[in-house]
Image (cartoon, rainbow, N blue to C red; front, side):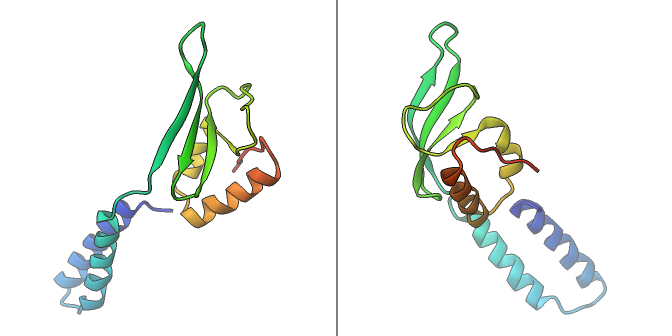
Length: 124
């Protein structure tokens, strides 16, 4: 799945090629304008509720956040051995490489699974 910036760049290139060929690109330009408006909208937000650090090293073990797009509190674990003190869903740091390209709808589905199966992991 392409990022929004990649889709915009691809659209601009396709429009330039089509214009050079003398083709009508009015519909393409409308869609590209929609994508650019979407890109200009602010990104969904999340707030840090708490950070848990290792007292010996000072390294962050976990972060408790409030996610606006997912409408929930959740934990992001850097240390997979850390057990959160509540029942909020858990995401592991290494899952974000896979999850970063997913839509909010897809992430909500992942969240449902994580609520049903605590400490489950996303795998490709």
